[in-house]
Image 1 (tube, rainbow, N blue to C red):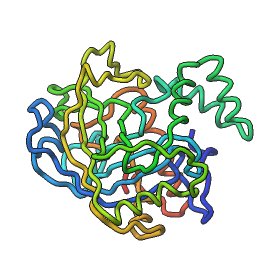
Image 2: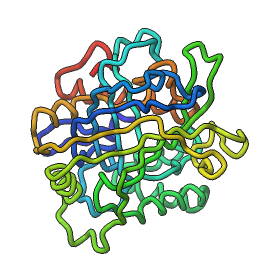
Image 3: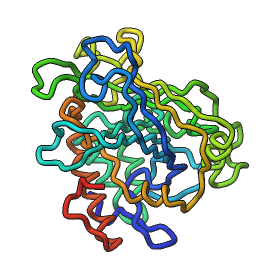
Length: 322
């Protein structure tokens, strides 16, 4: 699935198969709220008031480097460092907890089969995008509508957009006997609308916006948990269905505090960040991913990471290890 779709940047480094272009990589603190409801106090959220160091990557969703004015989803990936506990993947030596978000509440594809159907056409050389569009138009108009809705969005800055996990996760004890399905969201203290004419802006205007904002002050996101309500209205196996935030109101469980800092291209932090794997399966058992889309992501993300490492000549013995 990933081999053959992966492109290389100008310096020859393999790109991620998705979210290839980073708008910025920054350091942050992830502060657990002191007043989380008892039923949500699992995993990292069980440690009221604790602060985790984190690395945060903002990105655009495509698997290639393109101008920021080209419409696509924005991504937010948060990696908590030095997280102890039982892992979602047995035998995983990793000690991080990843939370992955995009700036749209649902995914275009309801399940792994639907995603594979589109990728089958999209991966055809030269005409893949056209074939995928025709397939969606004829056989999956609902999926096409979500794709078009995402591509009609523009953002002024990654720091002023709302993000959602899209797919569901377990939030409960490691034995899976107490807990529930949830989705996550990340809500900034200030939300802004996109620019009227992004085509008139520089190709890397999203990075410029992050650089300017963080040079002046810190930026804060509320991290929220939305518990699953009615399982028919809030399904686990269909990630194209939005969970109504009026029926199940998201609850704040943490603060992502991105402190004032200098954002520099090609810095040591950026290189470290680009060498990392951000994966929903980098997780404690208490936060394990749920559903077919997340099972597919496990295979795709690991294959992409292995391929990047091998093509860069630094293959790791453990594909999950950063």
